[in-house]
Length: 360
Ligand SMILES: [Zn+2]
Image 1: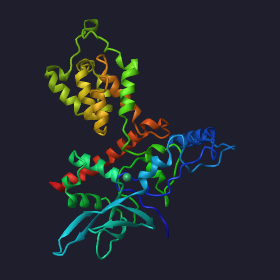
Image 2: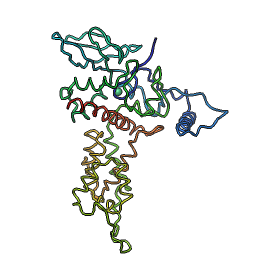
Image 3: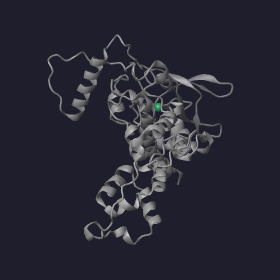
Image 4: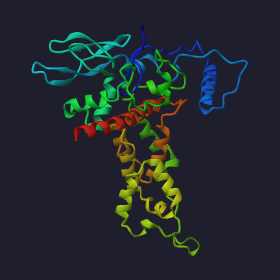
């Protein structure tokens, strides 16, 4: 029986990526389709007698066949017994998804084509489950585990144990939070759902140029912080943080996720004032947005023409956070790859908790 299996790291399929043509659905029809799905996700679906036929292709204005080509090549992580009977984890060479849970990859030197079953029961040679993944997803996982993209820095046996512990024997992916848009697409076959194009955009796409252009040209990012009189109405705000040195408060704030820090700033005038420091926000961007690649981060620090000296890094953080949030219906192709990387980074952080516990 034919069915699809999905990448253990990003949850996306290896085949069946269909990009529509401009003639098979007009932009208006696509917009109505995305709005209808968005309403149903919000639970506000209304019965529409003139409802269009559903669309099962991606918007050609947002992705093209080159942009989704990364999904078709896979590698896998498996465990076999060596000549001494000891289990050894291995990463295969490149291959492809055949069908019905079977993948074909190159193994060994000289390499020979070998067939494995994804996730399910193993073979004599490889008795446990085999986890398929895209190489670019594996590199993101390596960065969360080791800070590098070098496979030899990772403990493969621990990684195999962490991944196989999240494996359903009859499943087509791991039990990981791939995101609602990916989980909805994981049917018997991969569903190309309009509005979820970001989830199949190449996660290695750099946004360096977009960052450079935006910080050089957007005057809204240069608004200086507003001076607030801490003694408003002769009222001295008291705060449990008030007795701590500023450096320690900055350190505590830097450990919070962006959303939590935003809430704390809104709730506390004292924290609002203490975190108006531009240097704090420069550092916070790097700790709160670790999934930016090296070139993206470099673009924030310097560029062919250096960032404007009056750049407000708190506003830069707000802009970057909003522009790269993986959201159903997102329609800016420049940031869709980065949004996908951010989604996958979140999955990898979840996986890295199991890995670190096993490494201990
Ligand atoms: Zn993947």
